[in-house]
Image 1 (tube, rainbow, N blue to C red):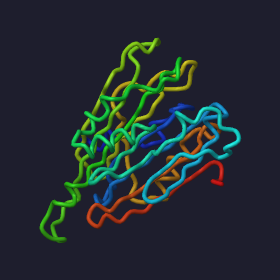
Image 2: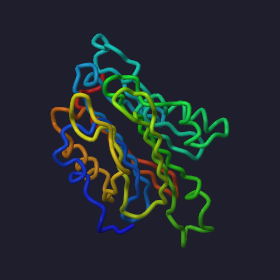
Image 3: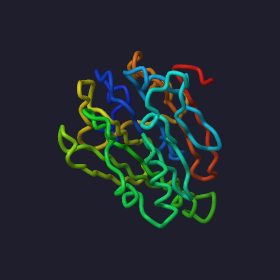
Image 4: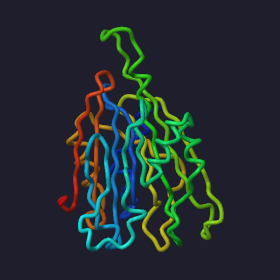
Length: 253
């Protein structure tokens, strides 16, 4: 990968007021930490009525005000969950589908064969998912000296082929970790009615060594009216120790 071709997150969402929900997976410039970021945005009152909650090493979307929940089926789910040597990130309840598949011996992509895009016509919101595999880091190198901070990850999008939702397009990408590089995929190409699905391959972006500055960069680049919640996690690939930052537009109750 030519690092000169990687762009900043701000450039990746420039002039895009509504990328929707987004996933970033990558590696810090020093090569020491795997990076995961997930954000949600919202236009409708139902979509905006959410917060992130981090409990028992899992990330959940929860209602900010339960009395105002209209349809929880597509907005309340587990966004991040660990399954063995895999960390799964997704924008819906396919997180559970993937983890169940992995437990039963299926691959990341095989598990997603059971799923399709969201049934929210006319948008048919894509299901985006990522699988960070940490087993390579855990088994590589025989000592701390000479330890190589390597891991791999995959990303997937399931989206409608046409405006009528008649067929599902299934795309997937596999990456080896590279210091200072991440990949970013999101649900919508831009704002619109209906909302147009993400096009092309995940965007190659620059990743920061500092979790606070990276979280701030992402949050500040997202449209102020539409941004709802952001979670960023750095995981030391040698020790497994992690740290995270969580930003909610509305304070969790």
